[in-house]
Image (cartoon, rainbow, N blue to C red; front, side, top):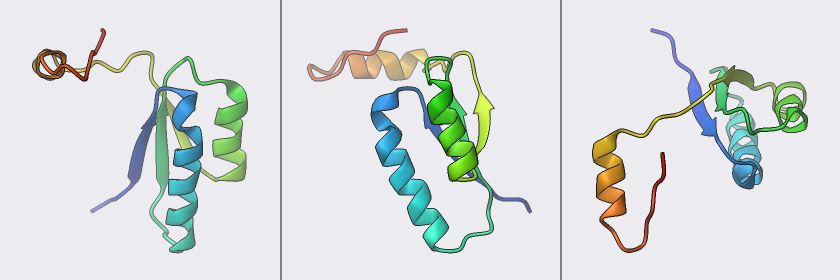
Length: 84
């Protein structure tokens, strides 16, 4: 069986948290590969940092769709608004 850590970066606002998570995983001396799915709005400087400095494998994805039933549930809450 093959394993991987896979995470998602759709906004640069979460980059610092992503670096913290990856650094923590690396501190465990894991041999499991780490992948990050990135959307087009993530700049090349961040992508290069992930690959060259942290050894993360990048998966580029044009769009990430949220299923309609989740959007509807979140939009029914006063505290959340999700847009397609």
